[in-house]
Amino acid sequence: MNITEVLVPAQEIAWLPWAVQYFFYIGSAYAAAILFLIALIFKNSTSHQFRSALVLVMAIGAIVGPLALTGDLHQPGRAWHFYAHITPWSWMSLGSLFLPLFSGLAVATAWVYLRDDIAQLKESENPLLKRLSWLTLGQWQVSAKLMIALAAATAISGLSIALYTGAEIAILASRPLWHQPASPLLWFTTAFFAATGLTLLIWALLPSNKPSLKPTDLALVQRTITLTGGLAIILTSIWASNHGHFNLYENDAWGINLGIMTTSILLCMILVLPLQRLSQSKLGIVCIALATIVSAWAVRWVTMMEVQTIPRFDVGPFPYELPMGSAGLLGIIGMCGLWLALALFASEIVSTGSTRTTGSSQKTKSKSNQNTPSPLNRSHSL
Image (cartoon, rainbow, N blue to C red; front, side, top):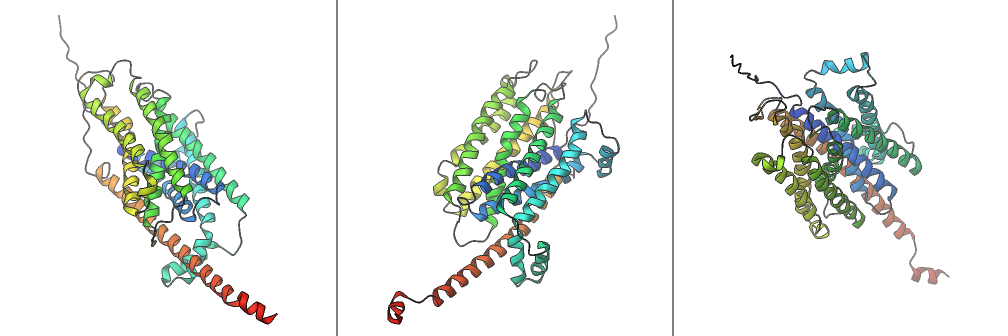
């Protein structure tokens, strides 16, 4: 009798941390597109700064997300193969058509909405910002109905991104934790955590003497986090129980992973309860923003990276160590720095435009008050 010992050699994981970054940034973009549409419909109740922060999260995520995707493809030159060899039965091939459309609509929507702020840059003392005023491409105006229609088209296109990104991983039958409806729904709901967190972070970057978030802005953030957080907790329990051969609740390491996911979601839901009081300072807003960002990232890291450490055919641990190079920690820091750089630059445009607009409106109001005679003068003239 012969005994054959089978050893499984070490092999690279299928989805790199680049995929987590792509899901995070593109998820924040399509979730922000939906929230921006809601805020735009209730334009009279929401503030311009809040809508500007939402539209910037949408545009920046639509730019940074595809860049992270090219990193996950290992070489940017592979992208043209999707267009040279279109396969309609492949979700990844369909995504190559959905993604450029959404990115283009997101950037166009942000540009159209922020044209008035960009136009005010011509009065800036900074020569670089002053030259950017030509990006308005004229003095033409966009009606409110057309703006809502453009935002609605972007939100619908964002839903196609949510569909394809969830489906391209959920179709992998070799991973029971992926091959279920709960996984794409979990990524979709927690995308609103990323959108609200990044929106509050950009709002905090806008220079202001005092917080200017309206009660409707705070209510939208609070209800979004509460609703999506409750759904995420339910989906997490459903997702964790859908593995026929590996009990996550009996494994110590996975008990920690599930505890991190659930605790981070619950923490966000608790932090937004006193949102009206915390909003009085930018420090409180930043704390809520960081909590929601970390929660959205933790859900994606556990459900995408840690799932790949579960053996499919063999037994034993398959640990994963985050590399320090461009495929790991350095890449994460680099994409985060790129997002932050774009956010700082865009927030400067919005703040400059808003300041100029506010100053001009105050001057117009003061002039009108000077030109309008007082009741005493009116009676005297009569």
